[in-house]
Length: 152
Image 1: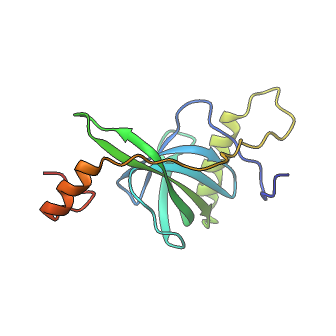
Image 2: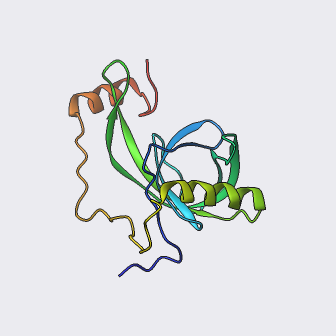
């Protein structure tokens, strides 16, 4: 049974946004109350942040949000063959401005098929998450005192 306050919509096309002005994000699902996004950096739960989503005229609109959860969900390949940890974060919108609400509603309306009349919540992933770590890379970073996000 779905316990959410509002209907979640999965965008039919890739919907890209930015978090904290410069961090690229992909919107996994969206509702009037919040969004689930994928990012390459961890977002601290309970922290407030801004997310810029495409507005009705295509211009980015800033929406204030609070990070409710953030967890690693796997890796993605970077240019050059390196891998980065991919995080999925749940955001709750806190912005009450008309412009922010209209931008979110426009993206939701664009994602709903015209003949859709029922509520179809986005499927939730169940089970364990497996993250494979390269032990040689970990040892190399420990020996060189390199932080996980640093590249030399």
